[in-house]
Length: 223
Image (cartoon, rainbow, N blue to C red; front, side, top):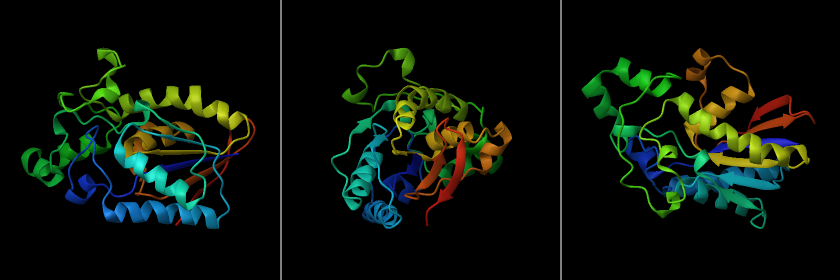
């Protein structure tokens, strides 16, 4: 079976170079094209999908829809979950990255971006909508380290994704740079210091071929 990980296509926040986190932003026209092209590439490689999971955020949902449309597989089960959301950037949500460098210095900004356990300044969740009303207040972060983000992603992987894989199904997860970095760290058993080297480009399928016991047999980044 195969586990396919994909970051969403270019969002409006990517284009404007600011930290998005849980702020809901749509894809740009380029992002929509990237997503459809990724699906076409998967189809050319004869990849099929039995189950798809996305975050609660529009940019992943739009990406998944276009990927599955290109695959002619819009009818497969698709589940949206807050656990695949992007890392919560706290007080830095919606702030331009260059402005952050000017204000705090490049070293601090890089520590926030790439450090696995580095805490961020807390912010609010005032911009969240009814999608999150079912969550307890304790489950709504005000800021996350990458380790915090991974800690909420992994229960979804174990509780939802693993049963599909063990049933012999191919799973597509469309998520975000940081939620996927945390999952990749776990899958590949990487030490904390290696996480800064994990790059997850927009709309680029990362395909893991798995053994029946879910050990990784191979990994391919489709381009």
